[in-house]
Image 1: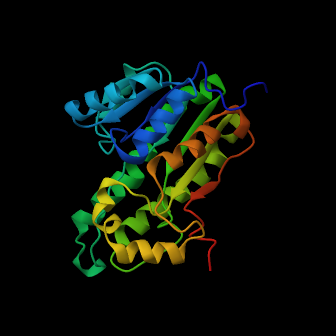
Image 2: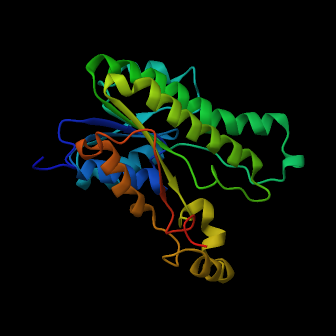
Length: 249
């Protein structure tokens, strides 16, 4: 392979990519020369993200709610065939389990499991027919690990890990690989309060091998690899991008 990580000629969709990790994954795929559809629910934010990514390569906006399992198929039908799907959109609700009612729990499952599952089903049909495809689910180290006050999110991300393995078995014979990336502690907007907390920074310095917060752009390389021809024999795996958090005793 002359250019093993090149995505020239491939078309990708990254859900929830108007900011944070999704935005940087979209940038990475575009820089690898894929045609990338950026996704969000707000037209203004979507337009701004596409403008900010214009220098990276071929990017276009696709407006839909990735958790709306009945609403996005009509939008996808208007898009060209997709070779790469990155399920990045999700939701979190940090509350003690006894304060998490049924509706809140269902919302977490819908956003983190059912939405990605139905997107996989919609997109994988074409991948199977063409005999090539890459599905990458963005899970979390909160899938295999747990902490107090985050039961709903941990449950949902664990489900997304299981979905990844199941779909890898289902689609492998058809030339479609399915993998996941599990980010650790990243300096994104939802974590702003913790990022600004010196005590948290000190804890991460001691708790991770690399000793700091991760930056969103540091996930992009893993996504490009898993989407590329170089990862053609990699499927059903969860790649932790966590600064050594899970390996660090």
